[in-house]
Length: 137
Image (tube, rainbow, N blue to C red; front, side, top):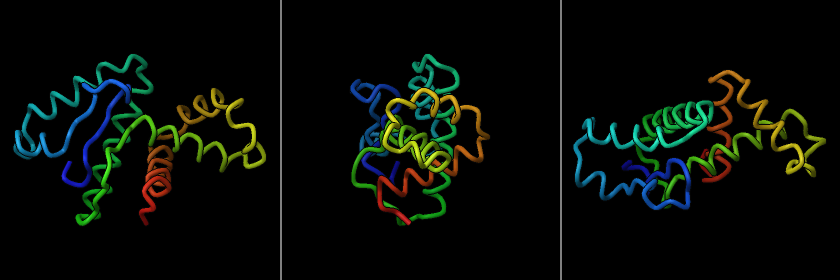
């Protein structure tokens, strides 16, 4: 949380899905159960189990990025829906570069293909999407 303004887990238009870093850090100590319970509550609101799991894997990868880069600072909220959406798009376009102009038509197939990849591959595209969106690395 100390590396960004906050996180948005789930529906980005729902303000209650927003975890503000300053507020969280001032109210909770590192490793506090209340934080984990709050994140778990937000994840449990995600209806689709595959997408919920993808959010969990994305959070794990963000934690790994933060751990490897202690000076990293993102000035805005990290919106998991946006980050994951970019990861799916990048994976699809890397696999099918000729379909770049018609991605919107292939979006459902791109998501199905992404769900079928290994967690390692998903994590690699989350990192690529993070770099793309933040100009990091």
